[in-house]
Amino acid sequence: MKRLAVYCGAAPGSDPAFADAARAMGVALAERGIDLVYGGGRLGLMGIVADAVLEAGGRAYGVIPEALVEQEVAHRGLTELHTVATMHERKARFTELADGFACLPGGIGTLDELFEAWTDQALGYHAKPFCLVNVGGFWNDMVDFIDHVAASGFLSAARRRQLLVADTPGAAIDTLDEAVRNASQGMTW
Image 1 (tube, rainbow, N blue to C red):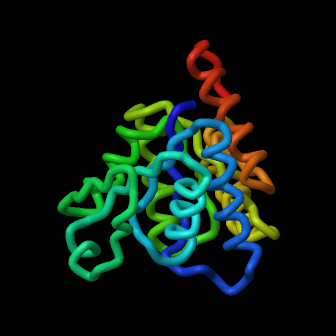
Image 2: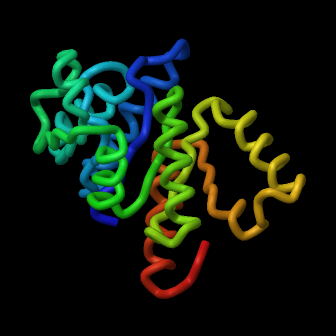
């Protein structure tokens, strides 16, 4: 895995563990020589993960819609900042640039990015894995809901298995790296 898209909140959240996990994700990416692809913001968990990557000597590529640049939330110290017209273009660029996706805690934008990546994978637009970073059980209720969707007959067992979950940033990177290697050998996760 050469580049990982990290979806996360533009706010720091209410638990300091969220910021700690974002920092740990950034450091782990830089230490493993994996580039960060993310939303291009300087605020919240997004800014924390980008700053951690850069401070640890890694590369960070941001993709941000013009409207957010105009609101002055763009991170100006990145390796590269790609400005796009819309959120749709942003998500398409994430998919183009990254080998996989990790989801730290976040809100509606994070959920939108995750579900679009999963839907695009289901439709065969890409075969890139994604993993929830379940910091302090943040994603537990959503995972339970996804299991409910599957049990209700709206999600196949194979599709459900695609939603990977790890408790730490390091474990998420390991899980995604293995899934990328398996996919390159024609295996699924």
